Length: 220
Image 1 (cartoon, one colour):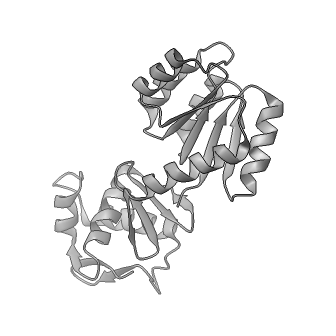
Image 2: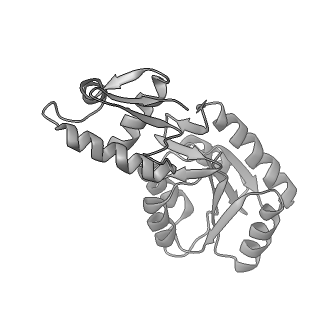
Image 3: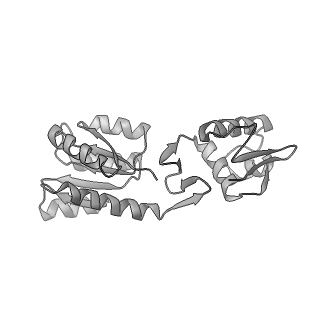
């Protein structure tokens, strides 16, 4: 399961404290100080959870919250000294998953993170060695996200959902957003890319087998 945490906090001392504390609970925390840096990272990588301070340079935390939600649907814990009821209500109205008033014990933060992760995990499906998040269209193996393109994800999901069944290239086209005139070699290229990304050897495949003259089969 993805256990990457993005901490958006401009207090360097608090950054270091949280990052080091979360390590003890096998949570991989990346800390940033600036809203623009956070948005850039979220465009490139996915995280299991975001911890967001409200008092940040150049942009209010609530405005950043709205920008984040345009990029991803990652759960957000607001962490702020703005602990009055008005700010809390506004945070939850925007869609915050939790609101933690500063100061707080790091252990309390861990417990809240673990609760949200467990709840989030229920929306994921385990197929063979893979965890598939159908909501965010992400695939994980051994806690690491596999960087699949949109088409690669669709093909991989289709094969996984038809485990141990032979899927023709025509069926793959019909089940995905590939155009109807997609050539066989294009599908084969996508399969090759998927195999490379999941660490599957085409000569001795563990997951995706080629069925000569027909198509492919996910064996898990």
